[in-house]
Image 1 (cartoon, rainbow, N blue to C red):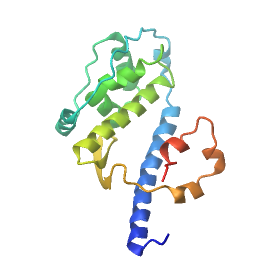
Image 2 (cartoon, rainbow, N blue to C red; image 1 turned 45 degrees about the vertical axis):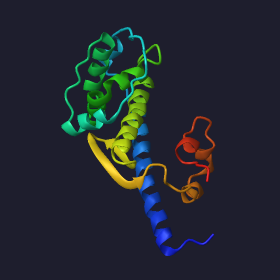
Image 3 (cartoon, one colour; image 1 turned 180 degrees about the vertical axis):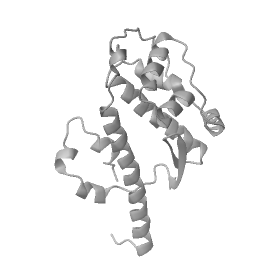
Image 4 (spheres, rainbow, N blue to C red; image 1 turned 60 degrees about the horizontal axis):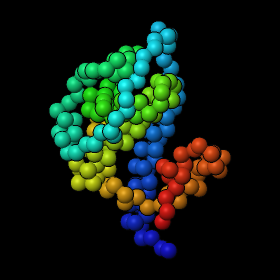
Length: 191
């Protein structure tokens, strides 16, 4: 199949934007892997509240984000404990997610019976998808991301990316074949 020069440029620019997002994801994952509870919090015991229903969001979330982050006010003991932990690893990303969709962060946190090195980073990671999808919906399906406390809207329409054949050629086979790897989830797409 022959692609005209304008099509090649579009595909290259699209891939470049997507790889930028993927590199942000890898940075976030490596940041999450370095997450450790501060020593004074490791000895604290608390009970997680019942998980309840998964929170749902609509365009009101985008209006809330436009108004800016407010200090998240925890209500339950587990929410207070999470805020305490985050206080030691504070960032615009974590504080923003708690401010805008703290219920979702806590829903993901409560999946397990404990808070550990996996549960909190996973909760914030999964909640990032929730906020990004809602922001995309509010921006006429233009891919939008909440990162480091800011909203970024791309010209790229959500779901319009072509297959990642160039990335597939460059990513080592060992990474693609990892049993718990995310290559197939985040990069491999059916044509």
